[in-house]
Image (tube, rainbow, N blue to C red):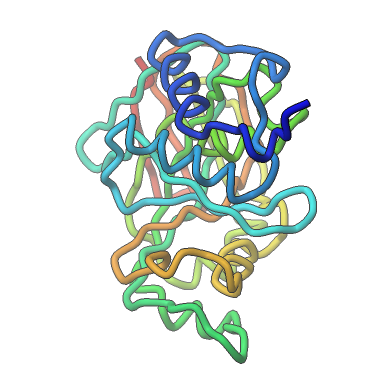
Length: 254
């Protein structure tokens, strides 16, 4: 029997994922030839990004079930200050998030790790943002996280909203957060990041010695993880996020 590690074709898997996205379809995990390791998954992700002509310097970070920091490009990526529009498809999910823009490079360190204070010093701006999720994989990452990573961690769009005070990276969890869809509340509770600290996964990634040397350069936008869980959007319409009763981000899902 052929060894899957020697026969795996990242271009073919990327093409299949791309075709599913274009058609608005999904397939079960069992319909795919699975990546066997992180390198394979990232090879697929890079080919998929090329197929989708992704050029934005905007990224999401998270960690795998075994604690490996991973990233994926955000696409489509739009500025939210002029009435952003994102396509809606059945099954689309939404997350309110905090994004940061780097003011200088964070090169890979061979010796001492970055501290949280190092990250804070490197951040030039902080924004309210909205991520949209719709994977080509029916089970998303529940069966194969590596396949989900190859599919850009399920990202199907991102809206970068207004600047917020830099101190929000310290205070986001616990801050009042309201999200409405067509005027009806779909989340009204304190914001809560899965790790408590919105910089947790970014710090993990900054200290990953195996990340690409081209990663975490000045100007990059990195979104840091949900503040409200993943909320399925049952209908298209107008979404508004209100953080701490003052900062607002509106967009249309059409």
